Length: 263
Image (cartoon, rainbow, N blue to C red; front, top):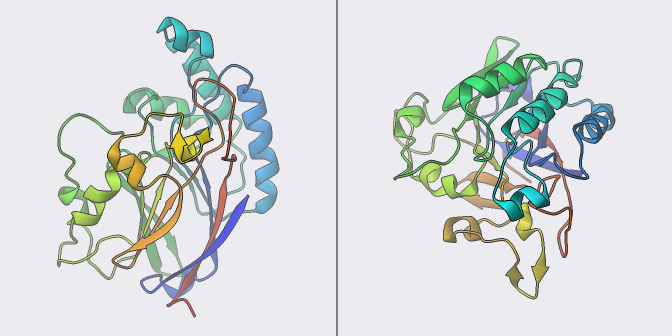
């Protein structure tokens, strides 16, 4: 569990001290079963976060599937449903939100699977969290597709003084998020949460054994800050293809949001 405190000038006073648990890339497959993923979440419930955010890529094929170029969609769906169902009583009093990754099913299928866990799928849509007459927004971006990314339609629905957490499974979206503008111009979000890269998963020297695009390589893992926006790329929980890591570690993030500028 990686802990961090993030100071946001736009955070409403009512939310000062709010905690967010960010869990990404469970990659349920092979040795990593849905039951083990559910057991992990039961332990993480002891952290008592106010909000739970899931970052996509919940189940993936086994090593043999990868070698054979096959995917058992029914088995992947069953694994996701078992995991999501186990989150029905996860204690996140301000809400449970999620985005989908490239390996996940379409939005309609994911919404159906997540319903059992009372999780809200954000697919280029916005979730609102209200407290004490004030609110913050969680904007979830759809998985990466073909063509140029354009989030201006979403970003213009906000004013630059709004407090917005943007969640994009793939950090390749970050540049497009940063170039989009609020309705009154300027930066439209305060914090970006992402995953997908696994931190490279297996690092030999300065090279990753995973194939990462130039955009993904720009944000391989960890915290950064650009134009006043905090950016987190998680190394995630699971692994791609094989349950092996070298030079990286599995991680989830407990983020405390505070109002104001960092001291």
